[in-house]
Image 1 (cartoon, helix red, strand yellow):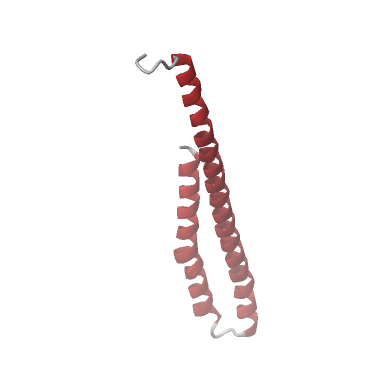
Image 2 (cartoon, one colour; image 1 turned 90 degrees about the vertical axis):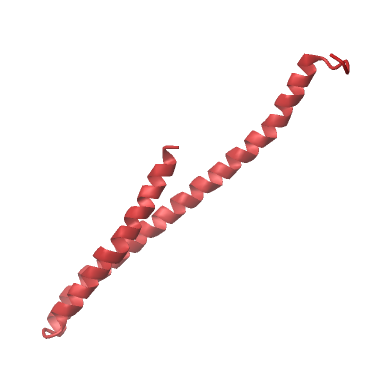
Amino acid sequence: MADGADPDTLLSQLRALRQPAQAVQQVTQAQIDEDRRWIAKLMLWTFCIASGVVLVAIPILAATDTAQWEPVSKSMLAVVAQVLLPVVTLVIGFYFRNEQR
């Protein structure tokens, strides 16, 4: 070696430099995984609560206001089917796609 450095010493120094970088990467990945889990849980709970509200509200509307219950129930089901369900599907798909990486 031109500067008199021992190759084993250089190799051990390189390994010592790599360990903190790997630790930071592991912590970052753990935080990303936790955030992804939280978002997926939030979306699933939102969908379940919205579906439950719709399923409870339709019979109540049918019992109280027989003239208006059909259009209101159709619009409530449309919101769940056309707005919330695709969002939940996208979030779950994103979650599982990134889990496989």
